[in-house]
Structures are given as structure tokens and as C-alpha cells.
Length: 354
Image (tube, rainbow, N blue to C red):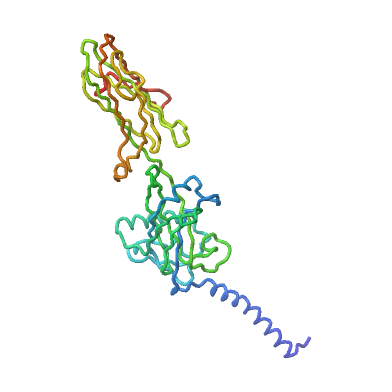
């Protein structure tokens, strides 16, 4: 069968069109994925609270009253494809080849390892940050704490939120430094979705809350002492409750005297923020308490004391000999777990200062 020149020409044009379509598709995808390296980026850092998925409702009250300093450090340049990173400045010895190329093959573990390496470099070389922000709740917006860093050039950044105490120093919030690329897209972050570049990126912080602890000093002053009656023991019950009135701490302590004077015992590792009541439940057989036999005090954290924001919790009691002729001596037994299902007895008769 003879094919006319006109038909042959039609086939050639159709074939050319078939080859051209994939090329156009590739060009369109490439154009859509190219980064404008001259366009500035911004990074909004937030801690979402108030019922949103992944929010931190338990910390709502704290985040509405506190400010979290955040710094970002530019660790790498990025090319126009958004798939190749070249280490920059103080981070020049780092290797980003594992995250260059197809983002779908990059695991969370790889990102975490690189972030740890970048943080180690930052600590050792102390480069200047590319930008800083204070993450705090805006006026009239109790649903999130936010801070925005602007005028950032495209690249890979290390985000470093500082460890921060809540206003009462009862909790320290810590954050793990991590890497984020600017600009970003749904495809590069999640491996799917739109590949359109977003130059105004929003990221969320996930805090770890570390409860703080404090001490309590109990001072007892024995004004006078009857040597003929022998040693005199005084016993205290210590009860700590939280803001809801739930008992979170209980202990019994004692002091034993062989002469008049003052002694102090210090209780360690009491949760900060507890309201602690100290009651003298035994005042010695022939001794009388002067003033109140019960004192209540708020436990402040060691961190608050160190920062000069509060004083260490303390209570004081006074007793005097009342002329009686009955001696009163005792010990308070303390047992500690041996970690293997048994208990270790701390012999109180070997203790000093009580």
C-alpha cells in the first residue's frame, strides 16, 4: 500500500508531538520546583495549645505566661532544585549527601543524626545566629505561642529553642534542636502533595516537661534541757498537696536532743509547687511547744533559688522543758528499696545531728 507524502508528514508530526509532551511535562515540573534563591524566607515557630491535634493542653497556662527564645543557624546552601545542600560557614565539614536528591528516601533518623551533628558544631564553634525570635502568646490569643523570624535566605537551618522555665520555676521545658529547609513544600516535607515552594514556613515545637524539685528545712530550737531525763525526741509529720488538694508527698522525720540548742534537718527532692504542712506530732514527754505546732510553706525549686527568684522553703519550731519528770526518746525508721524487691534499713542510731 502506498502512503502519500501528506500522510507521512502527519505521522511525523504526531510522533514529534508524542515526544514533545513528556519534555513539556518535565519542563513544567522542573519550573514548578525551582527555588527563587533571591527571595527572602520567613520562619514562624509555634507551640500550639488549646485542643488542636498534637497540641500541649497540659501546658496551656504556662505557655500563656512564658517566652521561649529561639535561634536559627544557617548550616547549608540549597540549589534551585531544593534537592542539593552544600555546607556553609562554620558547618563546612558536615556532609549532607544523605538528604540530597529524592526526599522520599530520607528517613527521620537521618534528619535526627544530622541535627545532632549540627548542634555539636554549633556548641563547639559558637557561630552567630541567622535570626532569633521570642515564642510567646500574643495578646488576645491564648491558643498558641508564636515567634517569627524574617529575612532569611533560602537554605538549610538548625532551629535551637532554649531550655526555659515556667514563671514559677516548677517546670523546665526542653526542646530538641532540629533541621528545617527554607523554603519548603508538602512534597519535600511529607514525600507527597504539592511541590509548590512555600517561602513563609510554619513549624511547631514539641516540648518535654521536666518537673523541678526543691528542699525543705525544718529547724527546731530547744530552749532548755533536763539532763536527768536523758535524750529527748521530737517527731514531725510532713504532708505535701498540689493545687487541687491531692496529697503528693508524705514523710515523717524526727530530731533527738542531748542538750539545749538548735538543729536543722533538710528534706530533699520535694516536688516544687507543693504546699507542704509540717506538724509536730510528738513534742517529747516533758517538753512543751511554744507557739504553733503546725506550719505550712510553699516548696520553691532549687532553680528558683539559684536564679534569685525565691527563697528556700523553711519552717521553725520552739520547745521548752515544762518541769515534768518523764523521759521521752525514740527513733524514726527509714527504709529504702534495694531495687530488687527488698528493703534496706537506714539505722537512725548512726545518724548525727538529730
